[in-house]
Length: 605
Image (tube, rainbow, N blue to C red; front, side, top):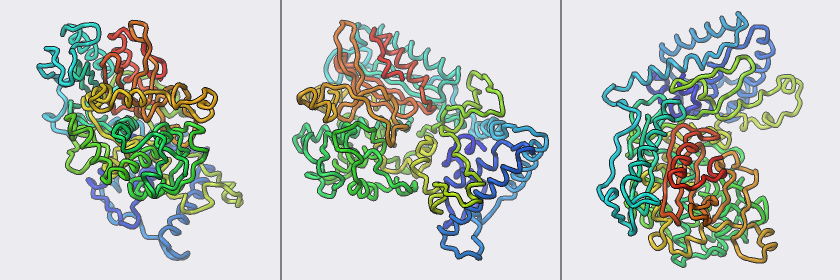
């Protein structure tokens, strides 16, 4: 019930396993299982509307059966094998009671929010199943800093303390301010679990961890908890490419095929195009991809190598939500002759002490579940059959709904009369397993261990806020990871070909925004401009000077950002995802107000 409410495929599979529900290997389709459970727990249909509903469902069921028959290559007339090999008796009893209660609601003409109601008790049961000794004892996890941070020592060189003060009083003030802000977020239900880490000149000056690993997992978030930070990992991958540029092993205007001969997607696609989302391959994904397809690193590299750009490279900026990783990761591997994650470990993580705390090549089985934050989303699904309810606090249960509207129903009249309906033209595309591109718009899919362990470097990075803030501190200090020239190039806004011609040369200087396109729904901070793989935000500093921050945001709230002029870096990780993240807005405003810097609208939206 909880998994169905959260659209959490991984949780559903775990519940099947714990209950003893056995699925036969040939019929396993987690996405279809989730869709089926959500249908079973859907709001009852009033009896007066049941006839039309049943007609539509019968038509859809017939199409689904034909699709399964085609997939399993079962001739007409032969019976399809049941997807379930063993039904636990408790589940049979539960489904029968559910059907009875939903039928009662239907008879009474009540479209009762059945799943929403059941989910509250289901979550409580899951929380109580965790031993009390393992549960979070307080809203905030006890913090601690290295002694050198309060003494003003800096392992990277430079002075410690927060901007504008060399004393530890400013550090303490920021710490207390963040603790108050995070506590309020947790109490008011605007966060489940999160981490905030702030570095000044390479030294940690504030760190707050609060909340729990998940909505139904009461274990505490600690400084070492790993969160899926989605597109924040693009900044890490871009840093790896820029290291190669800095080393002279590649050049920004080299054609990618020069270094990666198998890359035949476009003869004119350069390293610069790939970094600033101008390659024209934003939609380079198989239309009928399964999760296994998208999680197949070598297979997707091969696919993107043969894909055709949808516009002239350099002509437009379209956000490459997933293909950014296949292109840039593949380029790193072609140049270094080693897995991209191995190169990043050698060039970045090991030297900076982040090994194990930033994972861009998948989370392996050695990482225990008590170190992984579980994602939830808070995007309300409206319903014309019920009034909106206002809730506050941690029990804001009905606000946690699927981030996507339900798919439009197939019109039964169209189906029965033989009219062409795109979604039913091919049986294969009727099956949920071939809708992985759409499924990835549900962030809970990323809770699946299969997806966590996959190499999806553009959207599947796992990290702690502490590690990200430390990494951004090193990236933003010239000479530590990148030279001053490479750093300035990385945070220079990139222009399109047309803008460049109008301006009379140079790769930077413009402030173009990404266009709507494939992957745009996965783009957070749409108001940011792009440098070389990094999102940029224009800032006005306390002395009146202007600069560009460097970093990247992630779907739903995560953020890693640095302001080189202030020697400042910070990161936020969160497992409650929102289209307009309250946690990110509050944390960003808290830090910027403390610095005396106005937070740009592009960073808050």
